[in-house]
Image (cartoon, rainbow, N blue to C red):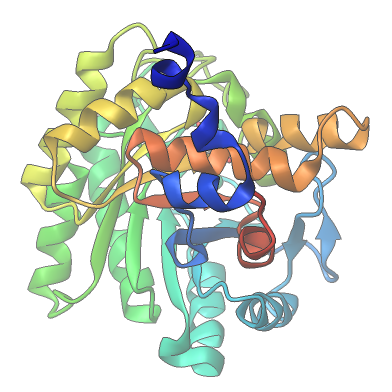
Length: 331
Ligand code: PBG
C-alpha cells in the first residue's frame, strides 16, 4: 500500500465539518472578562487613544457601557479606577467606591465585578505601593496594609471579586483575613499572581496615567513584578498566592508567557486567567488598521492559543465582541 494512505494528514483538514469535529479546543464567550476604565477627571466618555475602541468612562457613562456589554453577552468585568488626585499616601478611594455602588444599584447580580486593586493610579510616582522616605524602595508591609484597607472599602461597596495587581508579598493572605473578619467571606480574590515586568503595559499606563518614575528614584517595577528570565519565580508566586487563599490566579501578559500558562495549568486545579494586556491588544488593532490582519480572526487566534495553552479565563479588551465573533468563527 502507498505510504500516502497511511500518512495522510489532510483528510482531517479537508473541510470545515471535519475540522470542527477534530477540534481539540473550543472558545466560549462565558469565559471572558471585559476590562473597564472609570476616570474621575472627565465629564464625558473619552476614547483612550492608545487603546483602540476603548473609552475612559464617567460614573454615569459606565452604566451605559455595561448595559450595552450585557446585551452582547458579557457579564463579567474588571474595573480600573483613574482617580483625579494623586499623592504619596492617604489615598482617597471614594470615587471607585461610589462607582461600584452605582453599578451594583443598577445591575445587582446580573453582573460580576472584579475590582482591580492597586495603588499605581493613586500614587504621584506611579508605583504600585508606598515608598520609603528616600523614595528609592517600595515598602512591602506598609503597602499591604493600605491595600487591605482599600480592599475592605471596595468589597463593602459591592465588588464581587478583589483583584490585587500590585505584586507585594503577603497581600492575598492579608486581604483574605480582612474580608473574613468583616463577614465578607463570599467575596472572591483573583490574584495577578504571575505578573511580569513587561513592555506590553504601555497603552494601559497611558490610560491610567500610571507610568512609574516621576517624583522618585525608581524607574521601573522590577523589584516587585516577576522577571521574564525567571519562570520559577512566577510559578512559586502563584503557588504561594493559592496557599494564601487566591480563588483565581493569573498570568499576565499572556502570549509571551504561554509557557507559564501551560506549566501552571498542569500543576494547579484553580481557575487560571490569561490577561491579554493593552500592548498585546493594541498590536493586533494596529495591524488590523493597516489591513495586515483581519481583526476578529487575529483576536480569535490568540484567544484560541491561550485556551489551548491551558487558560480557563481570558481577559481581553475585545471581550465584548467574543460572542459575536465566536459564533461566526470558521474552523
Ligand atoms: C498595575 C497594572 C498594570 C496593568 C493593570 N494593572 C501594569 C503596570 O502598570 O505595571 C496592565 C494592564 C494592561 O496593560 O492591559 N497595577
